[in-house]
Length: 285
Image 1: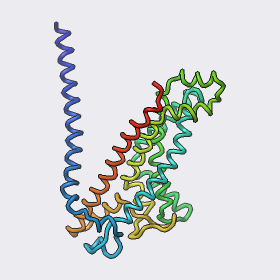
Image 2: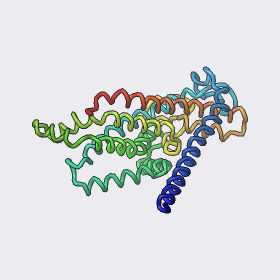
Image 3: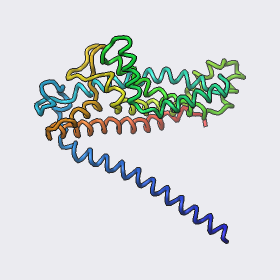
């Protein structure tokens, strides 16, 4: 009876800890979303979404955040595409029928370390590289920084999804004469498609909401960039600059921009769930 009582007590303690952790996470999320909605929803307007910030927007004059919205998309979408293309090749290479387990374990460890590195480190690394080759803040530099930031996230997510593909499915393809490359690209990739899409959209959400990695690389501009060499504003960096203002009206605009960014990120998260569910029809059960 003492052993049973002890196990029951341990179970209740750990259940309590789990519930406490869950309440902290959910409570923090509710508080953050609530503060952003309360302070930002009332300040959001059509003019803010359809106009650029040129003309003294940071001094309380007219304008909007259109250049930051477009800039965020121009930065995050190409970066996510590049990270996906590179990460897909890496994740397929990491499978045990294509490479040695020790090599794949080392690469996975490296990706996990890169995932945990603060995003500002990527920005500083790209800044040093920019100084060495003599280029300034630009759209292309921001894309490179975000690609490096998203690469370990997307790669590890796709790697874990591909690892879930049954080995028997690959062996069946091999027995029918498929090469390892054909099996990986045509069969394994299709079988892991829901996880791959979820990983890509997760990386997109991280890239579109990050400020530290592009603060020193993409720069800032009041206009929509016309070329890869132009400085580019993004919603996260615009929020940073708006909230640093001592003018109350401008600080309120920072909350409105944060509310807009929150909507975008939540939309990406919902889209990720929807696409993952739709693509499960390709999965062989």
